Each structure stands twice: as C-alpha cells, then as structure tokens.
Length: 455
Image 1 (cartoon, rainbow, N blue to C red):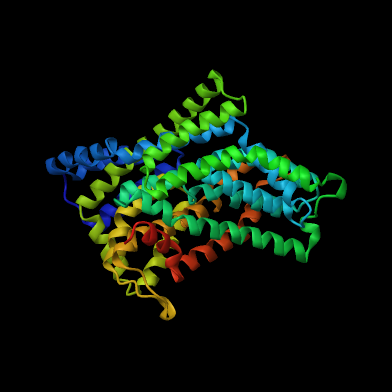
Image 2 (image 1 turned 30 degrees about the vertical axis):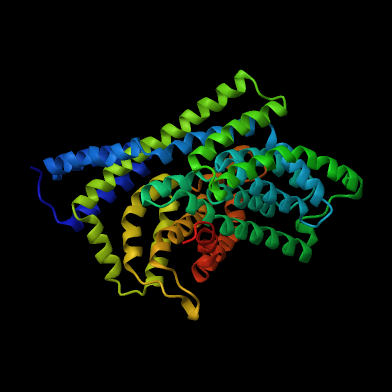
C-alpha cells in the first residue's frame, strides 16, 4: 500500500519531475515510463498496478495503429524514389514566372507530399535540400524562403494520411475515417493562406521573391511535358484517399494499398532495389518503435495520474477559472502551445487528450457571434483538428520546434538559427488565423464528414 498524498501535490511532483527529466535531455518514453513506475511504487496500490496492463494491452493490439508503420514505410519509399524532387521541379517551372512563385511552388509541393506521406521530417529535410538552395540562388529573402519551407513542411501533420491523426483517433476513440476526411479542408485552407501571404508580400515588394529570369522559364509545351512525371504520384494520392472517402477500404487497408503503390511508383522510376527497401524498412522500424515506446510510457504516466484523481482535479481547476467554453478552449490551446516548445507531439497528445477531451465534451459549444455551433457528437472530431493545427505551431515554436532543427540540418551555413526562428513567426500567425477560422466556422471541419458519413 503506497503513501497517501494530496492530488495537488502529486500533480506538482509528477509534472515537475517530468519537466526536470526532459530538461536533462532524457527521451520522452523513458521519462514518462520510469516516473510512472516510481510514483506507482511510492503512491500506488495493487488495484492501480493491475490497471496498468489493462491500459497498455489495448494499444498493443489496436488494429488502427497498424496504419502507422505502413504510412511511414510509404513515405520512406517515395523519398527514395525521387518523387519529391520531380514534384518540386514541375511545380516551380509552372510558377517560376510569378513573383514569389518559387516559395509558392514550395508550399504547393509540400501540400502534395503531405497527401502522400503524412510525415513532417521526410518532407522538411528533402524539400530543404532541394528548394532552399534554388530560392537563395535566385535572390529570395532568407526569411521568406525558410518560412515557406517551415510552414509547408508541417502540413503533413494535418492533410491525410496523417500519422498524428491515426494516433489521435486511437487515443480519443474517434473514427479515423471521419478525422482524415475532416482534416482535408483545414489543411488546404492553411496551404491557401500560406500561398496567398507569399504572393501578396512579393507583389507588394518584388525584391522579396523575384520571378525567374526569362531565360530560365520554360515553354507551355515543356510545362505540360513535366506534368507527365507527376501523374503516378498524384494517382497514388487519389487512390489512397479515394478508397477511404468512398468507403471501399478502411484507413489501414488504404495504408496497405498506398505502401504497394509506393513500391510500384518506385519501380516506375527505376529506383526499386533491395538497398532502398532495406533503408526504408529500417527508417520505418526506428520511427514506429519510437512512437510505440512513447505510447507505453505516456499511457502508464497518464493512467496513474487519472486513477489518482488527476483528471477530476485538472477539470475542476480549468472549469473553476469561470471562463466561458471558448475561453477554456483558448486556455487549453495556450497550454498546448507552451508544451509544444519543449515536448514532441506524441507526448503532448498522450498527456493532454485523455484529460482535455472529456472536459470539451461536458461543455456547450454554441456558435460565436450568432454563427452555428458544434454538435456534441462532433466535438472529438472538431477538437482533433484544432489539436493538430496547434501541433503545427508546436513544430515551429522556438526553442525546440522540430521543424526548425530539421531545416537547420540541411540549410547552407549563411542561414543562422536566428534567421530560421524569425522566419517562423509570420507563418505561425497564419496558423493562428487558420485555427481561429476553424473555431469560428466549425463546419470547415465537420461538413465533409457529415456529408460522406451521413451523420
């Protein structure tokens, strides 16, 4: 029988210890898992000990999680096949004659890649190696060039097939198909905001993003010839998303189809060999193992906290602020934003969603300014998309935003970390605008799922 402790002190000790261990640089999975074991020994009992396997085992056997390694493998194979370079080449030659066209082409290529791979790191690093030198060589403003890459790269979080959406659907017990469908419009909304911002700024000040010189532009005939290279990857996007939307296949089955499609596209590009498959498989194994270990550690951590009354304590504390529902949502978003400065998205999702989502479900979400509100059954879907946009901001927020370091790892020496930090600020403001529109007009998220799933 463990010692008794007040839940307020337990919360302080538990999350304070987590903060210290993370500050020391220990991996998230081992921080949460080891703290759960230590605190369970000190303050737990046999009933809580028996609860732990019953929380972890369902995750180990959850069918939907099998989509994670499949989509990661699909991303790795497409990267090896050189699809990213060919997509960017086609888009930037189409838009090269427009002021700011290369930066807009970068966002467009990232949008297409997000719909194929759903993994931020692969898009960010590969596009950074291809697009950033091309923009800097042609006199683009460093902050605009870096910002377009940072923002475009994070679209993989939101636009399906998204690995984050899969993990959220499992934790929130939300239909994965509905979540993938619901994130389409918000994803394209953000992509459109980025492109509009780039083109407007470059139209006002052409020095920020000069158009390609006439000698580098290609004829209309050559532009259409370039499109042939994009047919196979675009068909793969349509196939993977189409079978989900039409209801022919589940998201997991669609991931299997996508994986086979990625192998087929690699073969078409004459890049399919055992070395490429081996490298893609090892990258998949590493990424999946990382996600699953964080799953196990964070599940034990949050499970112990909830059983000790932590969920009720946090709910009472948040509701006790007296804020209206949308004020509480803003408070949650601020917490997510701050956590995003220090913790990766898997940890944030597993730590916060089991606590925040039940609070969201208890509140009434009437519309702001007389606009339509959110139905109770749509709250998990709506909050899921808001959460994912928040995690996009987390990828860009200093000091530890992952995308900032992905870009720095491939940027030329003249691009300093300070430049990359400043480049992220304006695009983070656009992400705040995007999430604000999703909150103000929830039908951006809920309309398409209600149409396709007849809810």
